[in-house]
Image 1: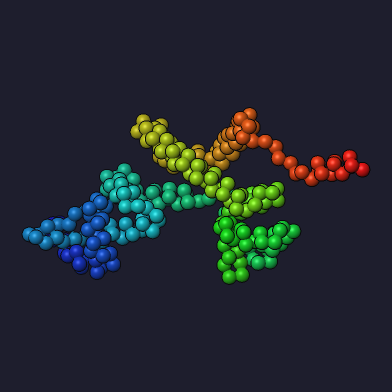
Image 2: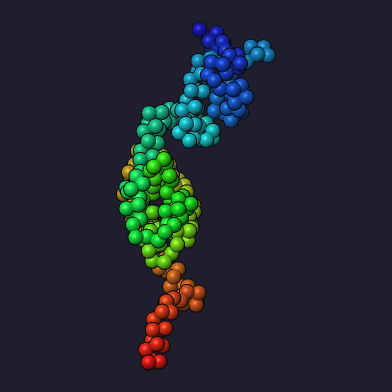
Length: 255
């Protein structure tokens, strides 16, 4: 049976069968994610391979892939450079938490106990900052580690808003660094794979996971120390103390 004999669906029939709108099917074709249909005169016909490809595209989109990444992946699958099972396994491993900081669900009683002795309004401030999300009579803590840091700063005079803004600054710059590092490592991985030095990107992942947090901690601690020392030497940073002690000394002297 020839390809033309197997191609039996019009674009409208394909859309009805898969639930994918006709204009979306045309968009996938224009981006190279979906093979071109078979032409019979002025009409275009699709077959089961198009149905399967649309199902695959939907699965990959559910996993957050953009159409460009989907096109690259299906090209690799077609050329035998990758297998779907290997890719899904690698993607699943990447989704596993790289640290022990995983979301936590606390009851109203538990959150009240955790904030016992804290200033009034702190709970509302944490919710407004997005550190906590109220769900019925429970609270979702997306990052217990970050909330612990914010509470430590709050106990030392840094309010929740300022502390949360600090985490946003850190996240923004680390996100850029992480992207650059990912591209840097991927370039070298591709060279090593071509040379036979390593088997796949999975080997890179295995190597990166245990050192990622340690490297970020060591380098950031060094850099923030350097920055604060520089600010101090340039006169942009000075030790600030409460005037209470001076007032007490004045009272003692006056007596």
